[in-house]
Length: 160
Image (cartoon, rainbow, N blue to C red):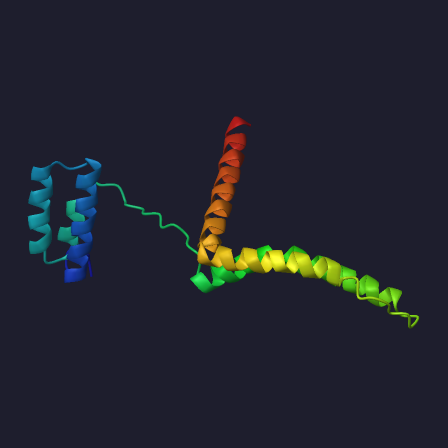
């Protein structure tokens, strides 16, 4: 069956109307052309009639920004970013303390001097960061860095 014979649905007419509206906003159609085509859109009965209304217009491609999946995921990633160095450093200190005490002379638990003060600072940083929407700011900063890096790479490719 040819597109001239297939009946169009209301959703199809709406899609064409949105495409015409975008063309008007971009300056591809003047107000009179837009009005005329819009009337034809809503009176069209087949796909063929709708296609004829947009054949001289470019395809509209809208880019949607990529957002984090959910706020919980964004917060989790920020917390890992804030705490990962602490966990690594304290883990290494505890491992050294354990290895040094294998002979039975455990002595004072000195990793506490690393874990304690740094941990208090990180708890404060975490509480204030969560109350000041720091995960979202951190994500935005990382996205800006990524975009700058990508733009630099594209400029470099164009120069070559």
